[in-house]
Image (tube, rainbow, N blue to C red; front, side, top):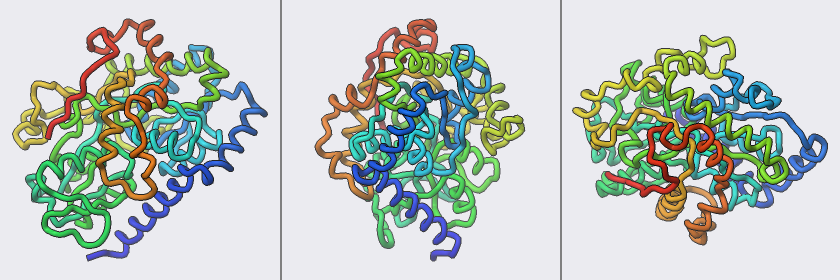
Length: 400
């Protein structure tokens, strides 16, 4: 049964998706790109203007601002600007109102090849950091058959991982109508709406970034069925996106921005509890509306109850030693290539014909500019500083 509140949530999500669909088309993006060009001409040396959503995916950008890391690099930086939806964030980015954002990694593919916008991925923001949360009585993926599950966006790694898991159990993802017993209906929903929707049983589960999974646990209205990092090892969820004009015309400025993000991630690795304090609503900066307790449960590996999650099957690949969320900035080409392949076989609503013509290897080098992050990593102790082998090559590992 559909309640008035659920109808409102779904209608708003639908409007946001339609708006993004327009922005990520050549004609829809054109006026905004023209605004960006005008703003760029009027202010060629614009300060760093960060746009973000209040989720843990934005952590390095916010920590770098709070700890004056950007400023220590000699950058002028404004206070990061909080947006309430991906559509608002993308619109501001395309129009040049902000010049560095975190964006869902599949969404960057849509942005560059759907709208032909000059956008480049310059680094990863974090690894893992998401989970599939379900009603307490659901104990397996097959229990989701005939029900509705919320995703934050069609072009999200959450959608990719969820559909990968559902198909492995013989379940068909659908987007319209009432789901059959071997189908799971997917609906787009803002993360802030997911927790109340689960509590009121409008949905059987949701897959999203933290701390919304931790919030459901704290409220005792849901449980973690699976961590996404336990399915796709060390995957990126959100990446740092910048304007190609800035990269080409202000390379020194771009290097300072990226170097600051790398330094912030190194600091986060050693200061998990302090990071939670920075992001919490108790901080005078008010970066996010989340409590310290919900954030520290996500950010501090010592708070992770491995026995609980391994016993419940939320963690299957114990030898991976995955953290609930982790941080390393290098955008491995193998990840981008595999992401393109996965998107080709993933149900995504709206205009998506461009996906079938994308060559994974081409996208890995055309969408991503890794020159700046490579230099920053080398200057800050190499990949070993992040506990990784000294290599910019890896093999993707995806399980069920």
